[in-house]
Amino acid sequence: MTTDMEEIAERIRNLLNDDPNISEKKMFGGVCFMLNGNMLCGPTKSGDLMIRVGKKLEANARARPHTREMDFTGKPMKGFIFVEPAGIETDEDLYKWIALATKFVGALPAK
Image 1 (spheres, rainbow, N blue to C red):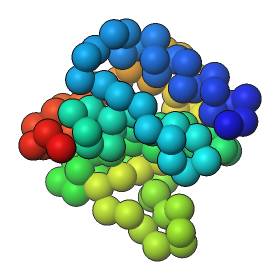
Image 2 (image 1 turned 120 degrees about the vertical axis):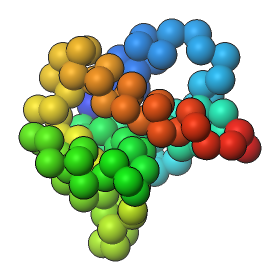
Image 3 (image 1 turned 30 degrees about the vertical axis):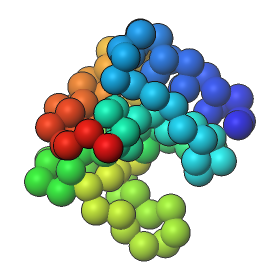
Image 4 (image 1 turned 60 degrees about the vertical axis):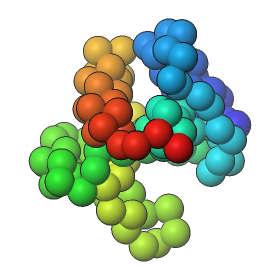
């Protein structure tokens, strides 16, 4: 994991505290945070935050500053977006994105 990835991951850990429903899984060359076994969010090598907002909220989330389509493989992944580093500069910014993802992912059936 790059320094940027580890720094963002540590900030996420601090915000999620000791939620027993949160786990970490190695993927994408780093770590992904899971809620009840469903992908929630994770840092990328470029310092972006990958966040799962769901298809219905994707357009609204993408309308916010410092966001872009999630396209790891060159093909858009629906229901997920990237938030650029400028969009998660403060812990408050990061928390707002995690809260949005938690609202969607928390409603999914546990895996």
